[in-house]
Length: 250
Image (tube, rainbow, N blue to C red):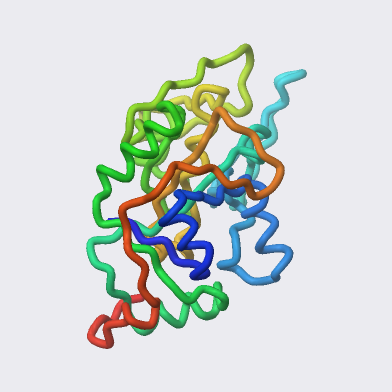
């Protein structure tokens, strides 16, 4: 099932009118800097962020490479900055621990309610239909390094609903290599056909969010924008009523 936490009025508009508030990826990155608090956004959102023992920077002009040791690398592709994203929590239970309730209070103090969407398939089909198969949806990966699982998702990952893949245009935004073992290396090219998949990775710090994302690669926005998909089959509850003291993990 999906859960959307938020302000009661906003969630009622989501439930009754299907008003989904999408933010450009850059806005999530700016939240952390603006509020000086990790959790309100992510300064690495929508980009490739990885800690590496070794990395190389290569100039496309003259081919010169610079070796780097023990680095924290973060890059974002230009089109991801203003690509819209909508976030939900995906879980098997509506209930949360007291510890996670405290996390919500700290990071999102104005949130009082939760909208519960039990029928995932029905909701996702509604999303697919309203966005004409131009919405890419998937769970978020949580990692502090570029692991093989996410590397493969960036290359060939599929949306959970039917999706019209954008065509790759001339050129690319990023080319990177991953050593799979001592003998095999694989190459990843980020271009217009897959740049939006970089928006499905967040740091381990955020893992308890269990985030599921809906991204609109064919749309570009500079600020939060409402897209309507009509009434959603769901129900509204207070977050405090979801707390189960028997649950220990956040």
